[in-house]
Length: 392
Image (tube, rainbow, N blue to C red):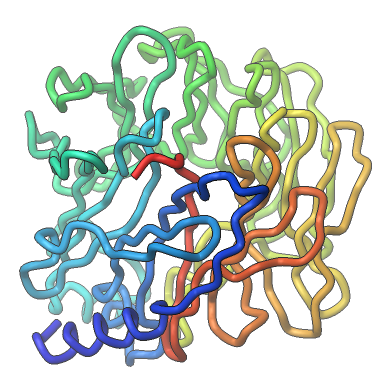
């Protein structure tokens, strides 16, 4: 991206977010939420993707700022906010680069080509000290790395996925990026969506769209049989008793839960014809969009998900017994996506097109009036909210 376009991007984003409302809850210190801002209406997916910038904002809509400009010093580079350390002291950032030639090839062939002309690294950014650490350049195993997970417990390990010869492999590493080891059982099969159990002893992921559970070192691998060809994004419940994922056919899949030993499988909600993919850009995207998967409530007694009702996609809540609650009521054509409960379980962040743009909002966890926390201008979007902490 040339200097003039980057300067324009920064100026409009800053002006568009300068005067956001303050609406803290009960006088408490508002919590940081990390997310990504980007252009949506440039000519191609590639043109829009390289404008992505990792940002943070308070849960009352104040304090918005972009992080780590040094990661976007070169052409065709971008950043994306990808999560927080467990204590909220460090932000997880992705830094990406793609060559325009590879972007053009992907656009023409309508598929990714991540074996050349790409680079994606994982960084930790300490919010207080400002220290930025590239974890994947240490003992580098791949040019394309994503999906960082802090393994609970005393091991001090991190998990991530690395693309090697076009195949995605789960890895463990220490928290300084050293001692990387491949958890793959064999070199075949595409592994994605790695999730660590609350006690840090087991992992779950999908491999070729089948749910797998293993020990944290990759041993004792178990295939969770669902009878469905498409199974995606397993997530451990807060108590480790269940896995939540979507299952069915591709673009016709619904929230399911199952015990880690494969027992107790049941469908707990239906998405009403929603494909489960929300569009990211306003122009053709060969990838289709961003997976909109269900998530656990903070207590683990229910889930949040999105479903099509009439002509809109609405926020929904379901108990493990299948009792449903509709949390949003919108006009025709509005889409809600990516619900994320706050750590205390009191609020829910989500994305919505209700304003005409892709903006982020916060709503009481039981439903109610939503407040915007981003106000990006026309032709821009804000997506992928991640709750952090009150620490500066």
